[in-house]
Every structure is written in structure tokens, then in C-alpha cells.
Length: 397
Image 1: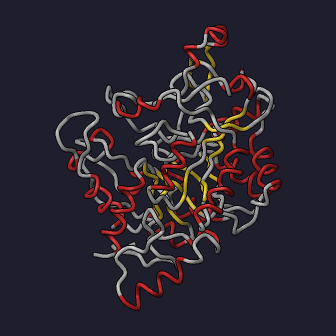
Image 2: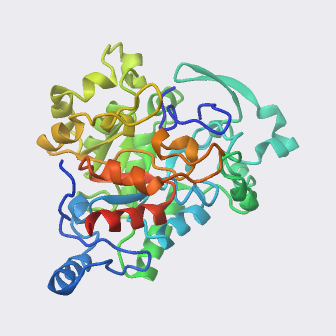
Image 3: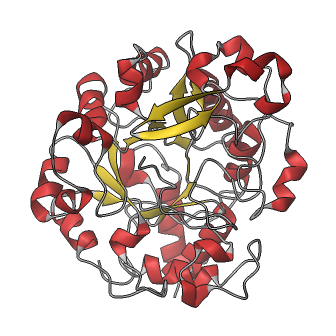
């Protein structure tokens, strides 16, 4: 099963351009919306541009864009309003709220995966013990509890917990504090936060396993589109970027809404699951060729590659020479928002780790600098505050 975490490891090793680029009509903002390190007339010009932050589609976002991965999941259990809220407080330009999966009665909720044993306290609910089951999810046998087997009312009795406690033991302090949000609640929260903060709040939801759910009669794209239309957020300049690991899901969304669309790309040797189902032999390596990128540019505005597709690692986990992906994607007009920067040692390239502790921070600023230097347009990060500081270092160097 190829997901954003397919090449990420926890503490136990288990799977779960050129230099600086110009800002595209926007300033680099701090957590309070303050322009960072922009002196004199240049600072005034950037501040004026920042006043329109979010009003002109993707190009209104600062570059590099700091995207709060599942909120501020480095500090709070992911895909909770506690995590989303903190991401904004820490300065994220966009919040990934959320990974969208359906309930039995057709509501969209925000969970990393439809299997919720690792992200909620469902195992502590004896009334749901009989719901534990094994399913084949995108070709992988998976045992646990699945959102499609619960009504929304039932899911609302659960509470979120930290997904990777070995790496983030301090996050377990917040276990049980927040419930599972629905996508409709997120859209209302976005409007509320926009009013309170005096600037447009952006979100970046993902359709999860769309082929799997369509076979169950729980198609995601139409549900997403209906909610976006209901809240007037289905336009080209709407502050909602839609993403998926399945190109056909993005193609379907392209016929339903006018939002910015992004194709997520896992490891080079992987195949999107919709390709597997359709008998399409192509891999991600084919999609990141100039031909593949031109095809994507026909229905999407960006790609979300794993960082390894931008800068591969050697056998020792150290960064090697960047690929031509940034140049090739920009040549056909695509933006790049790779994933995922995390502060903890196990998730960093080997040369940026400090010691061996699974929950210790490495030289994440050095890693950010290396990736920003490739010319990427933004990055998903679990630690938005770190990303904002790293960006300030980079654009003001």
C-alpha cells in the first residue's frame, strides 16, 4: 500500500531551480503574520503583497510554502483541531486538514488511514470489539477497525491518540483530548479562523484510497465536491488544494471542481493503486519523466513527491545529487510540494542526525536548507515553526 508514510519509519523501524527562488507575490510570514527580516523599501513592498495573502490562488502563497502536515503533528495527535489550530499558531501557510475517509453512513472524516486502531482509542471501547476485522486495503492485508464500518455518531464517541509514541512520547499527554473531525467541520473551522486571524487560512485535503472506497459504494470525489460547492470553495482561486496518490482521483476531481489539484507521488518503483486496478504498467518513475509530467500538467497544477524523488539517498541514508525533477516539473508549469520534513532523527537524512535517540531532534535546519536549495515550491512538515524559521534563514541569506 503506497501512502505518504510508505517510506517513513518509526523508532522500531516499522513502516507506517537554483538556490533561492523569488517569492511569488507574497511575503514570508511569521506565526503572528509579521513579515520576517525584510528591511526598508523591500520590506514595505513585501508587506503590501502579504496583505493579499491567499487571494490569488496558488501563486499568492509564499515560496517556499510551509504546509502543516496533518496539522502540527510533531506536537499534537494528528488530524485533530488541536493539531490544526497549533499549525496556524506556529505560522503554517497551509494546513493539511485532512486525509479524507468515509463513514458507513457516507460522511467524510479526517484520519490518516481508514484503519483507526493506531490513531484512536477504539481498542479501549468494548462495544466495538466485534468490529475488529481484516481487510485487503490496496493489496495489503490489514487488521484493525475501519471507518467505513462505523457511523459518524459512533466515530464521534472515539478520541484521537498519538500515532508514533516512540518518536513523540510527549504527544501522548494529549491522548483522548480531541475527537475525530469531519471535513464539513474543517470547512467551517477554516472560515472561522480566517475571520479571527484576519488572513485567509488555506487547507490541503487528500482523498485516501479512492478506488477502494468507490468499490464499496462510498466514492470520495463527489462527496468532496458537494461540500466544497456548499461552502463556495470549489473555484480556481479557492483556498483549498486537493491532493491524491491516485491520478484518476485527481482527474475525476478536475471534472467536478476548479480547485488547485496536486498528484502525490510515492517511491519511484511504486505504482499508484488505480494503475494496478486498471492494469496500467507504469510506475512513479514513469510519471516523473518529462512525458509523464506533461500528462499530469494536463489536469493538475502540482505534484507532491516524496523528498527522495527530489534528492535521492545513498545506501547509508545520506543525500546524493538532486534529480532533475524540480526543473522538469517547473518546465511544464507544475509546482512541487514534497513530503515530509520532521525534526526527529529517524526521519532525517543520515548526515543530519544527532545521536541515535528515536525522539531526539537532529540538524533539521541543515536538512531544510538542502531541500530548499533545490528550488522546491514548498514542503510538508510536522513542525511548522521549524519550517518557518528555516524559510526565513533561506530567503534572507
